[in-house]
Length: 74
Image 1 (cartoon, rainbow, N blue to C red):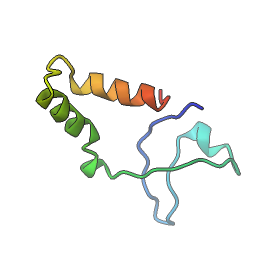
Image 2 (image 1 turned 90 degrees about the horizontal axis):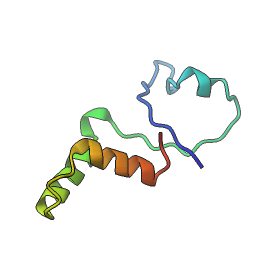
Image 3 (image 1 turned 60 degrees about the horizontal axis):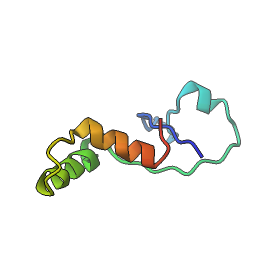
Image 4 (image 1 turned 45 degrees about the vertical axis):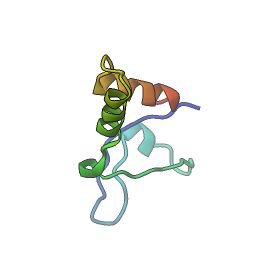
């Protein structure tokens, strides 16, 4: 299973704006998790934990890559 990450917007009619290639897949089912951008602190939280544990060489970008690879997200 391969996932993708994108930023979508809730449209006026209540639908979620999808990337064009995914919007063409009418009827295909996806598991969806919605995280507001202003509250998406998973990377900074993970970065703080890594720093507290002594993993000083890990940057937010490194942690993002680890999270994405673990979830098979490109």
